[in-house]
Amino acid sequence: MTEKVEYGEFYARWYKPRVSRLWWLRRRSYLVFVVRELSSVFVAWFVVFLLLLVRAVSQGEREYQRFRDLSANPWMLALNVITLFFVVFHTVTWFDAAPQAIVVRLRGRRVPARLILLLHYAAWILLTGITAWIVLD
Amino acid sequence: MAKTVVEPVRWLLFSAGGMLAAMLVPGLLLLFGIAFPLGWLDPPDREHLLAVLDNPITRLVLLALCVLALFHWAQRFRYTLIDGLQLKRHSDIINFVCYGLATVGSLVAANVLLRTL
Image 1 (cartoon, rainbow over the protein chains, first blue to last red):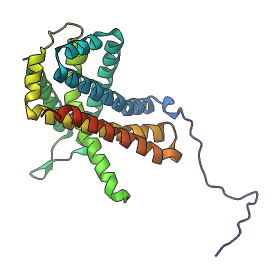
Image 2: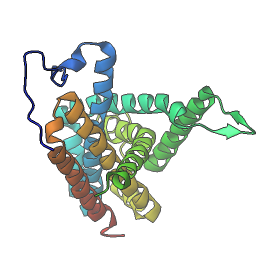
Image 3: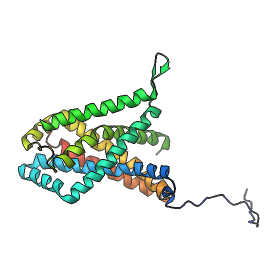
Image 4: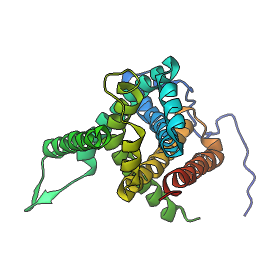
């Protein structure tokens, strides 16, 4: 059944609102959303940095020294300071969303969101402490 | 491939990577990226780090962190491009590039972390 559609003056076209590519600059909450999404780029950069470290350590003393020189380079330091801002932003926003994603019931009652949030921060502090303890000898 | 099969796996990798990264990355980055280079703390010598890396648990945790964090990135970044820059028309190629890079990065991570296990 092919029916020829006549496009008249009053034909209702599909409504496709035009959205600017810079829509996320219009509101603070939109900007925060995009910054949160972009934090993943810095998480990925950290993976690269970590792999460079592990490779340097396994290759030899000279390579490890070269990695340390590289990480003391002002550009690298600046990049890592920015990265730290983004990854902490990732952690805070991730934990903020956790109580909405994790619904735990104990004896028929929902565990309060604040408690779930608190447990996440406690785990973060604990794991960071263990990391530092392992790394620092 | 059936979208209903792939989609939950993507979100699972995204969540696992987001959680591991949230817990481990700030501390590690603060130490190796800022505190050691700036001399706030004495950096560990190579022997100590080799001993830490000699433990298979360390390597497995770091591999899990690398792989999952990369797939976390892939999921978030593809949506940043598709929604943020209004590139829905190109979503197939964006998905291919993001997940392709995450896969290649995971193989590199496995090579670096498991080679001498």
